[in-house]
Image (cartoon, rainbow, N blue to C red; front, side):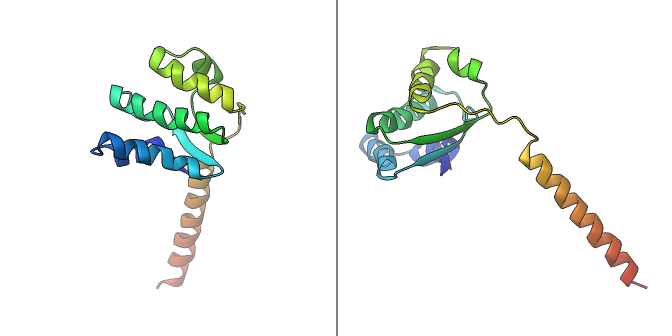
Length: 128
């Protein structure tokens, strides 16, 4: 499991052959999970590398799970050809699943805040 920001950071500064080997290395895994598609920068280099990863996995015919905050409409109606090439392959190989519930990070933050309040309340009672 990784995200495109991490992949792009690794690819930056690599020579072309090294980049290709790195991208192909993702095909050794029986399942590739990529988190937060769409938050990476949209430079020409970034889009080219994202396409390379998706296309390599697409050609390997191995499964992917890709999380994104993009809507299905945004994936089906990309803003340009570069995004269309990426999203078409994703939509062909992946089954869209919409998860419509409270943001897990918000739930964790609320739980953490509750725990901290308990700590402070119990801590003040013990001090004199």
